Amino acid sequence: MSDKVVLELLSLEKSLGLKKTNKYSTQGDKQVPVLQTNNGPNLIGLTTIAAHLVQEAQQKQLLGNTAEEKAIVQQWLEYRVTQIDGHRGKDETRTVLKDLNQYLEDKVYLAGDDFTLADILVYYGLHPIMTELAVQEKEKYVNVSRWFNHIQHYPGIRQHLPPVVVLKNRLYTSVH
Image (cartoon, rainbow, N blue to C red):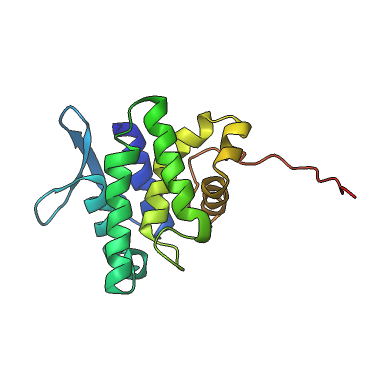
């Protein structure tokens, strides 16, 4: 987890336009990220550090604009850490994708009408999963695939990650 999460945080810094890169380390068996601050206590945990970076970049809209949006962003940040990062095996991965697919059926972004930190971190968390899925499997999760493709093409987000081919071109025939 450590190298992957540190790369995510560095990419997030860059996408937020932060000029100075922070010092990161990890702690414990699960390699939880730690931001080493100069003038205060260290910050621990992916979502805590990410929210801090958003505040530092003065892009608070990425945390949600209303109380409800802020709660939904927090919910998806927690989902990233507990469900996506915590999944064990193919069955749990399928459950995560099925749940997300259903949720995204009528949504462009995770927390409503606007792009948020939840979209960024869930995208980063799903990237290795989406990379490993066959095209046919991605087609089963058409809403996740649509959302994922949209986020990976959002300016400045993908950065260090290779692009993922999401859906193959479909040929439609007219049936009369």
